[in-house]
Length: 373
Image (cartoon, rainbow, N blue to C red; front, side, top):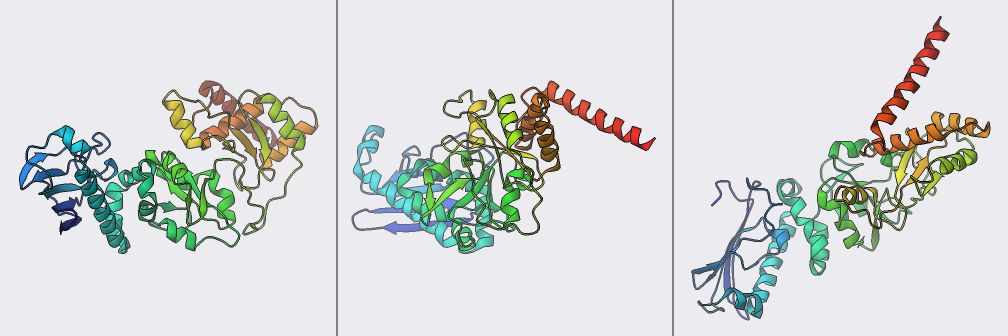
């Protein structure tokens, strides 16, 4: 019933243990109705060319973009909805049809340019299969495509693995709401400086499925915002900034932010930024925590970790103030809010944050005016 040319047409007949014919279409463009609203497959079931229902669930929800007809002679014409759910014949047809669609996708994925058209339309829906279907995860994973911090266009998990650096033992990824913000995130600085690729994920489902997949090609998937990422074995490209002794500053920040962060620590994964947030190693990553907060559910999230860059001029200046015994409570709050803003979050108190920034700017401009005169 669509007016566009299908991206793929699947037409076959199965004979033997099962006897059915299928004519399926993968559309060439997104439907006008959002796929997020309706999660059930609407492939039509016919018995001996007589329409029975389009609610038989012939394909799983994560393939709901596929349209078409399945006709079989292995079911009675008067089959009821209750019988459909219980009959093993329909379960076998479902498995066969799902397998055929995945085989078609795997075949078409060999043409990267052609497959990109499909992925941009329906990739976010296909990724739901990783989260929902444990039996099919190994088949779906090679079909996934991602933006990357290192290459243009779309890339796959097998392609990522082929480019991993010697000694790299994990597949790194970063999740955020805004695709543009991802490419500029301070979370990537240390990885870029060392030539380590990071996959950039921006669909809503991306906060959930990587943990379900867990590993690909025997390599764990790891969010760059979760836990401590040890980059010390990889030498940065270019000259690293000199680092200050920040032990006193770390202690002062911990005291000032005791109710807002679970820990404060120095990190080597920042280059141009002063601070960044990380999740504890045992809880969900930062993006999942944000989604949980929006849904009013923060159980198990815990407080974030504030990481500071010992080579940044701001951190070095604050380290000297900490050594002098100055009160850093206000500066600590500003650092934390800066880290939150960088990650696409809001300051804890936007009005107070704006006031502190305005005060700092006034002090800087006043100092410049004085020195100029």
